[in-house]
Length: 273
Image 1 (cartoon, one colour):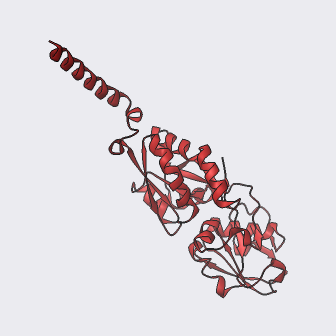
Image 2 (cartoon, rainbow, N blue to C red):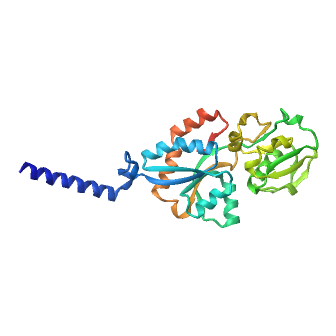
Image 3 (cartoon, rainbow, N blue to C red):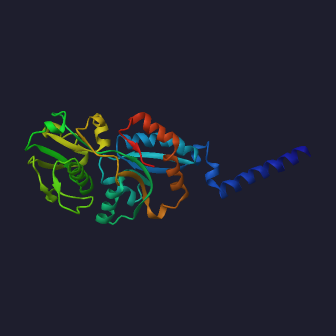
């Protein structure tokens, strides 16, 4: 009799557990790796990848198994996301995403802000911008968003003047006054750090500076941490209201991740939420 009653209770418990898992899969995932929902997130090397590693254990407690996939350029992560090879990416700001959507017709959206990397002008030859000779060659990024951002930085620091109303994507033809008679060479953003031996100075995104073992605070000109250049997490529009997208943002924008960013980067990377 006792055995029969116990068997009924055991069966009832198992059935109850199965029902709960069916009704609420997110509540039943913690502590069992095989039940975690796999989320493939594309990043660029350096801080974006490092921060996602700090996000990973927090996301696991919420039922997400983050698979961090690194890309060495700024083009492929959006291609991979749009084609379904990723669930999300974390490497770009809104002007860059807007440009990609306009040019390539991606149906991608931002679901949350991440970090800001103040852009810098670096030199292997000169310790200050004042030391850069007239007529020098400066390397900037060859994509419209990052190259335009670099030109806006140089304009804001009084290096030259740009035409009015250039928006976020000025080009070299928009320079109207260039008193130092600077010359510019456009290279892939991932190659700007490698160009330093061949130019007087180069505009380098912080993640590529860190990857090249360049201290971000060594920039001879540095962007003010303002404006629209806070980075973001992007997903396909169809996923923007999903439970996992909400949990991914919550995991990233947690106090523990903010503390990690402050401790590791000492102000060279700033939490943007």
